[in-house]
Image 1 (cartoon, rainbow over the protein chains, first blue to last red):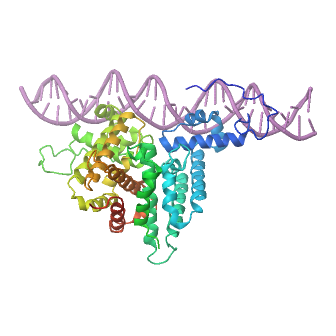
Image 2 (image 1 turned 180 degrees about the vertical axis):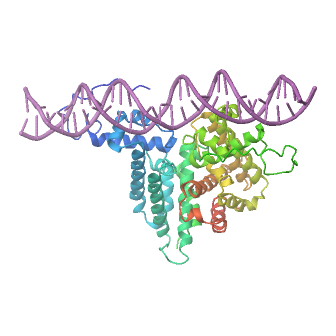
Image 3 (image 1 turned 90 degrees about the vertical axis):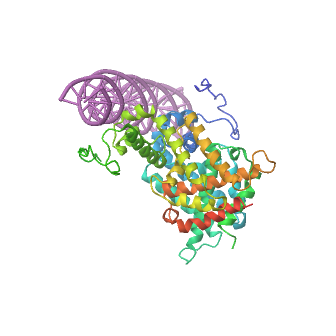
Length: 213
Length: 213
DNA sequence: ACCGTAAGTCAACATATGTTTACTTACGGA
DNA sequence: TCCGTAAGTAAACATATGTTGACTTACGGT
C-alpha cells in the first residue's frame, strides 16, 4: 500500500528533453494532471462521496494538500473532472461522420481501461449533490445528445423534431447504462464482451431509436 | 425540517383493524418498513456513501439507533434494500407475457415516484463498495437479464444462445440508464417525458436488441 | 553561487458519521 | 390492575475526512 521508497528519480538533471517517461520533480502542471487523472478513475469507479481526497492523492503519488491548492476543494476537483470528460467526449465524437456514430459509441463503450472513455461515461452518472457539478453534468449530457440528434436530422425548434432529441437522449442513456454495467458493476458476460460483440447490437440499438434520415 | 409535533396519534387504541392511515405507536414491523422505504429512496437518489443513517432515520421519523437494531448496520440496511428491489422487480416482471415486455419496462421506467420501480432500477446502479452488496446486486441484474432473455428464446448452454443473453443485459442496461437519467440526473426533456412518449421508442429499442422469435 | 519564489510537506483542526450503551416508555397478557 | 418485556430514546464515542496554515525544499534566473 505504501508508496515505493522515495527513489530520488533525479540524477538525470541534464537529461535529454525528449525523454518521455521520467517525471519532472517539481511541475505544477503535471501534478495537476496527475491529480485530475487519478480523480477521474476514482470518481468514475467509486462515486463522489465514496472517494476520499487521500485516496486520490495517494493514487497520484502527490500530497493531499495540493488538491485544495490546485482545485480549491474536492468539489472543485470533481467539477474539473466533469469538464475534462465533456471536453474529451466532444473532441472524440465531434468529428465523427453521422453514419458512423454507432461504431464510435461502441468503441467508446468497449474500451474498459480505467482512464478510457468508458470510464468518462460512467463519471457522468456520478453525483456530488452539489448544484454546480450537476449543472456541468447536465450541460455535457445535453450537448452530447444534441450532437447525436443533429446527425439524425434534429433542428432546434423545428416541429416534430423534439421527438428526435428525446430519442437521442435515450440512446445516450443506453450507452451510459451499458458502460456502467460493464465497468462499475461488472456484470458478466456483458463485462467481458469485446468491441466486436458490442458493435452490432449497439448499431441496432441506435438505428432503432434514430433511423438514418 | 423537524418532525411535526409529536401528536399522540393514539386514542384509537380500540380502533377498527381496517383503519389504514393511522400508525400504530409501537410496531417493530412497521418501523422496519418505514426505514426500508426511506432508505430505498435516499440510496436510489443520492447513492450509498452520500446518504447518512441520520438522513434515513429522519425521513422515516424514527430514531437512528433503530437502524443498527433492525438491520445490524448501514450496510445491512442497504443489502435489505437491494433484496427488496429484486423481489419487487421479479414480482412485477415475472408474470409478464413475453411479447409485452417492452411495455412493462416502459411503464416501470416511466413512473417517477420516489418509491416507484424507476427508483428501484436506479438503486441497482448504486454501490456501497461492499462485496456482499455487490453480489446481491449482480444476482438481481443477472436474474432480470435471464428472465428477459428467456422470453426471447435464450436457453442456458445452448450454442449461439449466449448472444441473446448478452443482448438482454444490454437492454437491461439501457433501461437502467434511462431510469437514472430521468430520476437522478433529471435531464430534460427526457425527465419530463410521459409514459406515452417513452413506450414507443423503448419498444423499438428492445425489439432491435431482442427480435421476437 | 546566491536567493526569491513557487512547489511540496506535515501536522493539526473541526466536523460529520456509524455504532454502542445505558436509560425510559408504552404495550398487552395474567 | 400490574408488571415483564419489547420498542424507542438520548447521548457519547471513536474514527474518517475535508481543509488550513506554518514550515521546508528545490528550481532557475541573475
